[in-house]
Image (cartoon, rainbow, N blue to C red):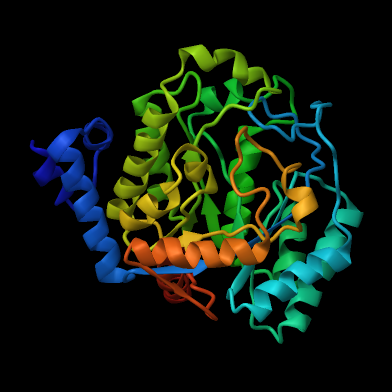
Length: 367
């Protein structure tokens, strides 16, 4: 079957996805053109913002790919005071970003639960309930997720990073604290509570195959996610996985494969929110804009106070660490205009898919 016929199908088989991931030349151009058409038809040439506040790089986990892993000693640890977090949220509100995203290393404790609950309530208060709030703070117990939801958070991003359980084990330490099944249970709990639920994977990992990536996309479709944040794997020198760098495809190939993943996911799940990951810009200066053109519709400008940005380094060569929040806003406006897209200010930009899923759940509560 030709690529043109595969793209026109209502559902993709695993082999179809692999064919699309391997496409080059005119076939790749056709894939990108079709995904752009689907996005424009359902969403328009629009981008919504999530002002990203990376409020702490303290993490209890020791994931083998991550620069803020617990045992990395070559890192200045920080934990933003509440007033600085709220000041950043006020910047997002004053500049009509529509939403903020609070992100940190993974920590579980009563004090963390209460702190985030309090921050969510205060962000709601300072914005009169007009700022959307996304959380990305890792695995928690369902009752914790429920407390934060009741406080006013309504989106949650929990990247699974690899949906092949064997690969998941290879990129995490070999002990009981890295339970693939718990990760899945957390995603299901978030969905059941009512969050707009997002996940994502790294593309170009050591040991990863095209079959793995096809499985990742099938997982997202079957799990019925509302939003996706996925990007290229970029090594961090202070991590165990960095020793496999010589065996990896070049960054340019990982970048290209990420764009294909975004385009295919847009065709598979036409109405979800897809983030143009900042890691794309670490490889290509206009990487995020290229992702927006072929299917992404969310960008997360960094509004973390400047002195801390360089310390939240999940991977090497993180871009824009020296820019101010205002610089990021102005730069994005110019870049997206050149990409023939516009930023939608003052709106949450909720996932169309979520609204449909929620209505379907109300009509069929047993599903």
